[in-house]
Image (cartoon, rainbow, N blue to C red; front, side, top):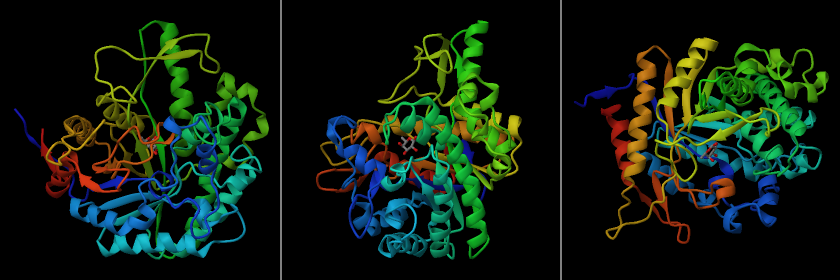
Length: 449
Ligand code: FCB
């Protein structure tokens, strides 16, 4: 028998997006190139050679998009700011026209009573800083703190919630180890250096934001986290899963929530110079008012000595549904939230800042988009979040990824994640069935499950 699952009274419902994936206008109004501009314009990096030059043209259509958010009934919108739009060279000169765009966006959101959650970095490093070494260079962390100051000075009279980074682990590992994201580097040492400097830059930016904010603010970060399961109960597989967990989850959670680093406990640490983590770094990193959890899937691992660093291979078990990108595993979000509470006892707020599924949606004969799979995915995942809240994990909000279909990095426009369908040729927006479903959930603060 189904019952109504009700969320806490002040639970925040929202959607998330990122600058490069939606804005377009890649070279307008004084914006400098980012590493994603460079990466997509070189052949072989993105499905069908696609790019985000236009994306879903949010830069020009933000009013229409905020009106859609209003129609759906969002409490909050999490967006990212393009560093290269604000500071085309990464440091030094500020491009006022670039800042003006975020100014207009924030005003438009507030006009419709939608709380802006501003994220300072979602993968798109100014190319000028990559030319000086990118995230593996410690100086980039200090440049980030300067950029944080510039944006805080302009927007913090209206923006109260600041996220420094989106998924620093992905920035480091997909960008500098796997080479699947910009800047396309494949070097394990660079990736771990990048990860430490990204975390350090969180701490330095948190200091800037708090020092220059024009009202009390919250400073958070958003992490990609996956529960890691061994494929069998053998000691080898369990140890393999534990190593993957260290690299995937503890590498960011420990520094941010405990002020410790697991890197040197672990074989990869031996590749890195001891001086990577300087005295005082971990104290700086360990500061959070809000932990954002992005959840899409779990990882299942098997011992396999062929793989470097973790001696583990990822396997895709039978028995569950899969999407165009991942296994669908709703219990994982519950497991993760309970584990964060148990292992870290965080004193900061916790929110789910991304969750969603790609579905090969299309317009039906009558112009509707019947994305039943997404509705099922959301029902099952949000119910698991409710279960964690029931068991005492203080989850304060949920952001769906994403508001609209958009540019999905190396997958180009192949994977549609939106509650709103976008015809990429005409830029016409159509609310999908899942958008209508989510809208009702937000209005009634829960649903029958
Ligand atoms: C997350 C990213 C986001 C989007 C979703 C599907 O890892 O933060 O930009 O690509 O995955």
